[in-house]
Image 1 (cartoon, rainbow, N blue to C red):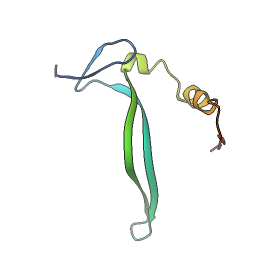
Image 2 (spheres, rainbow, N blue to C red):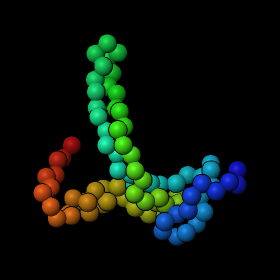
Image 3 (cartoon, one colour):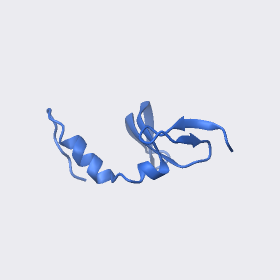
Image 4 (cartoon, rainbow, N blue to C red):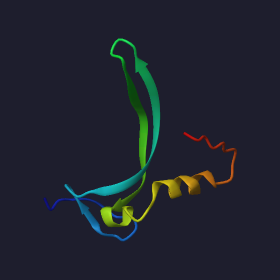
Amino acid sequence: MNIKYTTCMRCGKDIYYGNAYVTITRNIEQANYELTKNREEITVIDSSEIITFCGVCGNLFDADTIGNIINAIPGNNRVIEN
């Protein structure tokens, strides 16, 4: 399909519907556990896309490195290890 969806914010390449792409997104979520269904459910309260990359640019980034960069931002941060 050759209908443009968006543009890579790093290299400017067009991203078309059906193409893989990478986003960094800020979600506000609420986790619940449904006893009657014996499963967890996540409700997304709000979601905003911070940046979008084409597959090539997005795959240049390592999720752990991005997490370390975010945790290095000064502020009242407490790092929680999983």
